[in-house]
Image 1 (cartoon, rainbow, N blue to C red):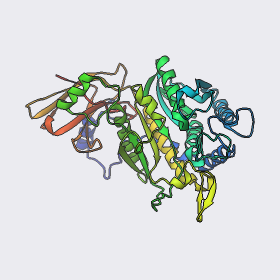
Image 2: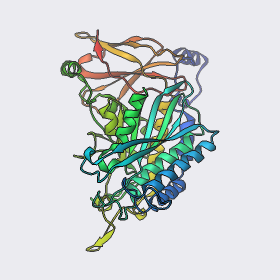
Image 3: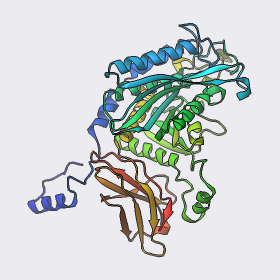
Length: 452
């Protein structure tokens, strides 16, 4: 709640509390979120990136025996870090390897049979242990020829930065308890065909995980774009408009009721955008209306393919001289993904972006179910939904112009299961509903899936 600039009269004070009773009024910000931002360490992130780059190569098919070089040494070290973090929080993390076998029949970038091994650390929620918010980074690296699994490929930014961010988020957030579960994971096999994400997504499906969303971090450390732009504030959030698993009936409904850009992944992107602007206004989140960069892919796609919400968080200005390049100098230009190309303070900022959004979602109640909308040919919009079976502050209705990328208007309507927005013409806006916990943390916004 914002501080009042001047004292209220007794009458106005009474009216204030009648309008916003303490049992139903959600505070605007949570001080713990600012503490999380302050706790993220650029120094620890730098140490992790240097360690990961120091394994020489982390190609998926590189050495698995050595303790100093290759993918095997890298994933064992990552697991040791998660184990250490768990030991420091009274064994609050369940750390394990999740494995899948790949063969040359699985893709043209698979030179021989190998295990794709993910390193997973699960921090169980106290109230909703089967609801998960996931932060992922990629373990593997590559050079110019992805089939070359022996040459040096330090992969400092792509993607030691994202992996270091996931480990640092675990260090910070493991000091708190959350109602929902959080997963910190290093995914393998990204450069060979997104195998790690596919394996974990299938594992989640088989184990009936209720996934709130996936925050895939792939390259969060470069601020010097090959286009000449240098920025330590801009970052991109990639999200697809609607799930690939939508039914034909859902597609037909969108023709009449809208929702072409209101799928679950897009709502997750909007949530990240809003949370970042609220708590880290110095950052500039840029929502990109695309699954990933043009013609390219990331590990969140595998989760999207199975109907889970997932986005990619990454730097805004890429330097292609430092991506997928053999270490060399040509015509005075240095190529290769080395530590010197990483800005650790920027990686700290994007790690904090992840941490505060995971914390906000992990502290939030479940989203309302079966949201419906009505009000055709009326000067109002009516919404109703199934209430969350928990003691919460209530619900907030959001709406926006049909051309706006963000939810620009909202109204807290209390602990009810329907509400009418008088004077708001349904034809001119898009609407959604979120659940609000007593500490002010909100669920993702749910776009109406039916009418009444």
